[in-house]
Every structure is written in C-alpha cells, then in structure tokens.
Image (cartoon, rainbow, N blue to C red; front, side, top):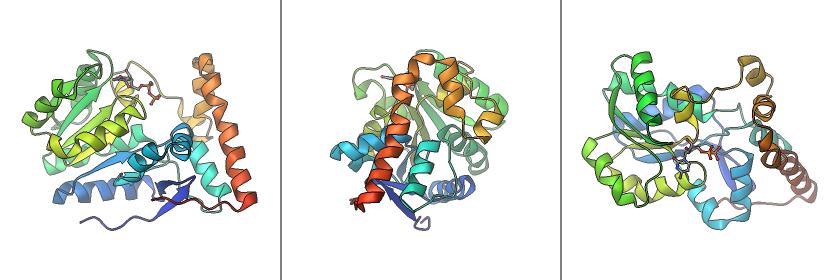
Length: 250
Ligand code: UDP
C-alpha cells in the first residue's frame, strides 16, 4: 500500500501537498501493488466547481491523488495559510509515469480527444519511451460507455489516461475505474493533444515564471472569459480567509 499523503483543503477540495517526484513515487507504489485509484489534476476552475457543487466535490475528493495543476490553486493554498510545495502539472505527471510503466512492464490505454489524436499520441510516446506498451486507444466522442469499456477491459491495460475534459473525465473515472480492470486512471484533459503534437505548451520561461496562463491567453484570446475566473477565485479565497470560513472536505 502507498503511504498516506497529506492534503490541504481549498474550498472543500482536497489537494495533496506533494512534489512532482513524491506524486510519481506514490503512483509507482500503487501500480506495483495493484492498489486501484484515480488521479485528478484540478485547476482554479475545477476547484471553484467543487466549491459550488457537492457532487463534483465528492468526485474530486474520492481521488487517490489530487495535484494542483495551476498557479491559481497554488496561490489559493497560500492565501488559506496552507501552502503547497509546488504546482504539479497533469501533463508532466502523466508523462513522468511512463518510465515506471516501462520498468514495471505495465501497459497504457489512451482514451480521449478527437478521432486520430490518441493514435498519434501513442505513436509519439512509444518513440520517446522505448518499451512502452500501448494496450489500446479510443477517441473521446463516444455516446455510451459500453462503446469503450469492453475494449479497455479486454486490452488488459494497467493505466488509462482519461482525456475527456473536466469535469466529464473525473465523473467518468469514478464511475468506470472498478469495471475497467485498470489499476490507475489519470484525468489529464488536453494532455493527449500535447503528446500528439496537436497543441503546444508554453515555452519554459513562461512556465517557470508562473505565466503559462498568460501565454495561453495570447494564443487563444477567446479564453479571456474563463481566465477572468482566476482573479475572482483568488479574491474568494481572500474573502474566506478574512472571514475565517472553514470548509469541510468530506
Ligand atoms: N474531449 C473529449 N470528449 C469530449 C470533450 C472533450 O475527448 O466529450 C477532449 C478534447 O478533444 C480535448 C480534451 O478532451 O482533447 C480536453 O478538452 P478541453 O480543452 O475542453 O478540456 P479542459 O481545458 O476543460 O480540460
């Protein structure tokens, strides 16, 4: 069994206080002993959803590992007086797990994105990580779970990257992990597009300065509405702190 991870409570949502390496070690331990669980990577938008919506909160808090995938969540943790060690980006976490899969002889299923994208991601990842076994892939535009679940089961995949966008992927993992036969599921949204070369991450300097969001805004100005939720999110956290509001994380 993996060791219990410490978490902080951001607006009722559990966020584990781990470095990238600690997160990877924890997942490697779960994989080695077949301990089942799903991984969520909330950003500010998703934590804010968890704040408002009890069902979404329960799904997030049911995860074996929940890492802060965004500077907004990292900053909010500090506002609440419970700082986390670092941002742990889902796209890096999922890729960082691949050498462990190779070492342990485990296989990967990639579920999500538009038709053809998961195939290209699988091809690029197997070229980058020789020995990586791809159990199967499927696009993310199916209507019924029964269109994909038997395929995942029969593939014998140990790990599944579930890339259906949030919060759809989180609900999907909670509902289907047990029946899938997988040990681990990681809900990592647009990562499959990045592995496939369909989308690019910000240059390292933006990531280092905590300005990945700004880079995305420059490339996709239509995201301005979504991004305005970031300052609002931090203001909410400050308001809670001033009022001394306590959040349950059950
Ligand atoms: N996606 C999918 N099925 C859906 C909705 C989205 O496979 O029903 C994929 C989409 O093609 C993209 C990924 O999920 O590859 C992330 O989508 P989006 O950018 O909307 O997610 P977010 O930024 O909200 O995580």
